[in-house]
Image (tube, rainbow, N blue to C red; front, side, top):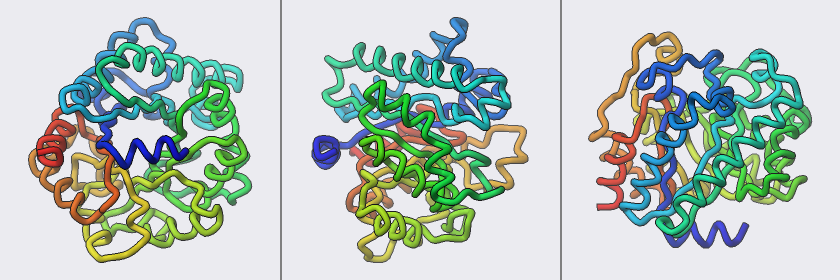
Length: 310
């Protein structure tokens, strides 16, 4: 864990953009239940996946940054997997294969990018935009054990829980990670008012989890929200915001409800997004990881690089 933190303090890291929206809107691939992981086992899409990641890794090579390879397993958990016809054994197999593919990509770039971390990505049990049937901390810990055990066996560098909508699920994931001796990253999504869908503030969620786990999470991130939705929450001086090291923003300023109903991709303004990240870097002293979320592609991350690394 200390090794990862030392690397993060010494360098900027990039990661990818909005995988699912890129596949759906830019590449014309149908993703039932917004799940990319079923494509992992389909030879037809191997080149699609590789070229997707290569575009971002080439950017890291160009700018001499580190890179975090996030596995495409955001939906590869039991509830979503079962909806797609995957058994428990199927899910174990596909999560394992995803990490193996990330290892293969890392090997390809090991001479070009000094530091590449492989992250096993977890998503929420239910909807990523709103809360239905919230779990207790204990339930969340048990629910996410399947993916966590695969990631441990495959020796990932860290686990990233992306698009967390309430603190109890994130805390349960943290406890599951700790039980498996895995470094864990928690990424919250927020509404247009800068609060989690649960109504919790970022401050409340981060401080609650840090207190309950003795600051076990490696760091925190914000994803699936436009910077304008949370900028005012990180402008003031406060200790909790120093725990935020990564931003994976949406391209669009729209609310989650509006995005849920959208039939066309809103790519926002890549130049403005880059400028906003430059401002965010002045407000978040530990900010070191940059990528994208819904509606973003390599052009958005390139704009962020041009402004943050200039």
